[in-house]
Image (cartoon, rainbow over all chains, first blue to last red; front, top):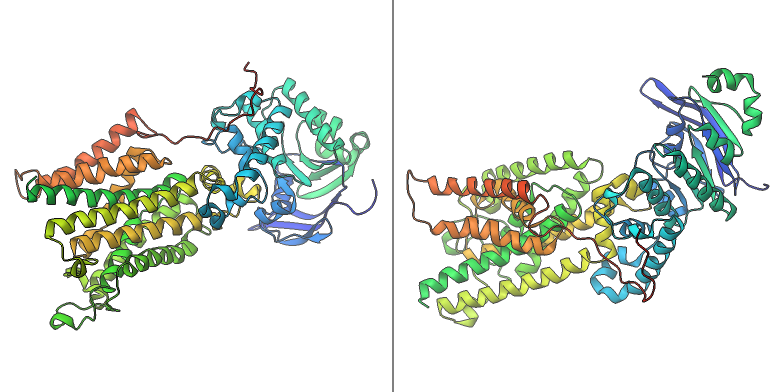
Length: 254
Length: 327
């Protein structure tokens, strides 16, 4: 991996009242990598993810995405630039069908603009047909094609995780921020999701992943950034981190 | 048919048209976009007052017995168009304040307060729309031009109302049946997830809010010019709840549900029962109407929580020979 990192976080800080949740956090995400972000509960991982994805404004520090300063942008603008996050808790649109969940995420739709909508269906029908075809490809890829017309709220927990991934991919992201994608998922499905993520990486998608399951992190992530008490403790491959006393004390040994 | 029967039926049909429009507008805001606009009736009232002051002429006319702002004599259909514009513009201003930062449950509270404030202001600032006495003798569209019999004009008004209702139906259908409608439902279900997918949630809510407000304004203009009078008593905050009941009973998120809800709740239960003979102490029948509307809503929530016509998801046709295998 060479050249400019896709995501570059410098000196990030965030305080809530008197509590400093994030203190001087800096790290890079290289294009084409799955970078892991681990640390004990309360380490500030989720705050970092929320800041990077635009859902939380930092107290200080900067985030560059693709060379452009993006800290301070709102979440929807970052998503349109290709920086898209998923959520730890299921966040499906429960009264929409599974395929409608994906179609919502299709980027830059004419059919989302009022003037085109009022002009009539012919303005957006062709684009919609393409989106439907792409959504079906994603449902097939994630092995839930038969769920197309089911209400998303009726899916099982594991199927909702797959839907969440498929929906995020529908936006054609450049960088995917995954917030504990394996939370509440059974071991068999964890392996399937791992395989999906590796395949996506091999196709060139960059990911930053917060995950508690260290086995998953070891198999998927290189490099891994360790956070504790709002700060970056260390980073490197999982094997290097296991040999690091400081990391062991703070986290791995528990 | 006797002419009094014709009056009765044509009255109900105009109310039906007005209420269908209002319910389609509220359904767009509440059923589709999830905005709990407890001030909905204020936007209908804004349209009603707009149409009134734009047709009444200068307030010095008729000996200046009522005072109001703006008095003008605009030709039909300009007052109705203006009413829709004012309903939409007022929604835009209110929406900019309320929809940007607040969560939807707090939005609902603020809307209720706005409804109360609006009533207080219009009642006490008598120079605006003649205070609590309201505006009377509002001219009816084209009445002096057409020279129809009273019954004939009633039916003409029914036609005019239904033409507007159909126009509103077509516009609302175009929105709800489009990707935009789907995105609005997504924002309703989970606004944070919608933002994470690149959706400008505030802008989307404003679109639904302004479109619904414009429709409310138009419906108010049609109503005020039909009954020729409009006062704060016509738009007290409980009237918003009638429309909410209608949308919930009919099926929130479904346009057909809004139509059926409008026919069931405001028309069948409130308008038609006005003609029931009074019994008991004065006002008992009116009070019972509210009880019946409440019971009907409760009953539907209990037995059919998604309404008579539940919201539907869209199914997409498959290219032939590519049916998915079901497990």
